[in-house]
Each structure stands twice: as structure tokens, then as C-alpha cells.
Amino acid sequence: MDHDPFVPTPDLLIHPKLELARIQPGETLFDIGCGDGRVLIAAAKNYAVRGVGIEIRPDLVARAREAVSRHALDEHIEIRQQDYREADLTQADVVILYLSRGALGQVSLKLEQEIRPGARIVTHDFDLPGWSAEREVVVVLPHGEETRLYCYRKGAE
Image (cartoon, rainbow, N blue to C red; front, side, top):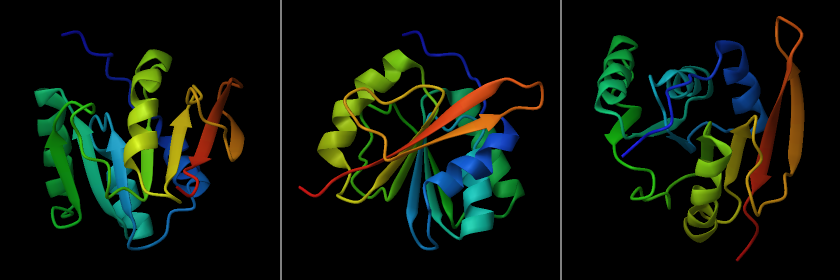
């Protein structure tokens, strides 16, 4: 099975993504396609949240787990080697996704079905098909190019 290439979230976008989600201490943040774990580590250190990373690639799972241990966050962050289509998202307060437009289309219905009312979803570069963004932010990168962050909130059932 082909996987999207690993394209890490640029460090300068991590905090804007977490701020856009209005993440609160004690919440549970899921990072789907967590890669090397950088977003979860920043969230656990700066926002006192529990993190769950979903990553299918064994090499990235190993890298993320190593990084979590290096930051002494093993009690706060769990990295699961799993296909996001099989992941249970019912405990998520916030879901962060940096996936291709096609992958976002595949996960859109799963989010609608599984996440709890009031949970937030943050995407970057691509909007989430079938959802209407509650907030959008444009971030200007160092070389002048712009990227867009989107925040969605699941409505009441």
C-alpha cells in the first residue's frame, strides 16, 4: 500500500495550529499521521494535554516514540502504529491533520461519525471536504509564501 510521503509540519506552524484549536490543559489531542511526533511534543510541553499519535509507517513510529522518550513525555503521549482508518477517535478533543486533500476526503466521514460534539479539527494547506471552517488563518512563511490553517468544530448531535 502506498502512503503519502512524510512531510513534517514546519516548526513555525506548530504553535499557530495549536492556538487555532484553542486547546486547553487536560484535553486529548490526536495527531493523525503524526510523523516524528513534533506537534504532540509541543502540545504536551506547552499546553499540558494528553497526546495520541496515529502513524502507519514503522520507521516514523520508532522516531516519534524515541523523540517522546527523549523529552520525558512517555506518560503524556502515546504513539500508535495504526492506519488512521482503523483508529478509534472517540476520545479526541482536538484532531490535527496534515494530510493530502485525497486523504482528508477519506477521513472526513470518519471524523463526523466518531468525534464528540464540540471537538475541534485543525487542517493545514487543505480544507476538510464536507465541513465548514469555524476559523481560518493565513500564515506568511519566511520566504513570503502563504499557508492557510483551518479550524472546524463538530456540532451537537
